[in-house]
Amino acid sequence: MRAILAMAAFLLCFVFGVRQSLLLKRRAAFLEELSRMLSEFEIEIRFAAPTLDILCEKAEGDFADIIRECRRDNDIKSAWEQACGRLKVLSYCHAAESELMLSLGRSLGTSDISGQLSLIELHSEKLGALRKSASEESAKKGKLFRSVGALCGIGAAVLIM
Image (cartoon, rainbow, N blue to C red):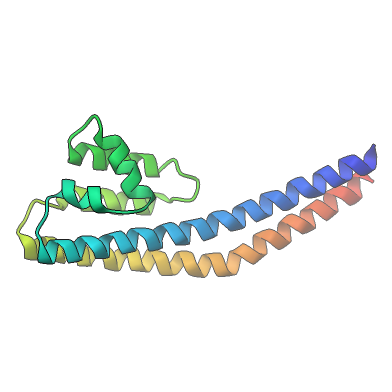
């Protein structure tokens, strides 16, 4: 019976460490996805000057999917704000990303093309800094979380035995 408990404790701790590591990787991938979306917005605005509605319809990724889901019952600005609110509850998303995208959504479509391009460039740079930080954090802390999870699991198993 103790052996089963010890194995369960080890697996629980190890899985927790792996989960934390995967969340770090997921955040880095999500920020990359947002960065690609802003690049696509910039290209579209530069050559076609579409509305925010059209931009969001063409966009790909989790955030765009959330916007489209929120769009069913709201105008695009409200849908964007709701989508940013939903980002806050995602386990791999930090408040910084949510606030950055909220700020962008409030300003997009309120100025001429050059103003929108400048706005996207500014937010892309901020997002780039977040992305770089998340990638470094994933590389450094990901292995740490897995190792600490395994070590805690071994320690728990030894205590149970």
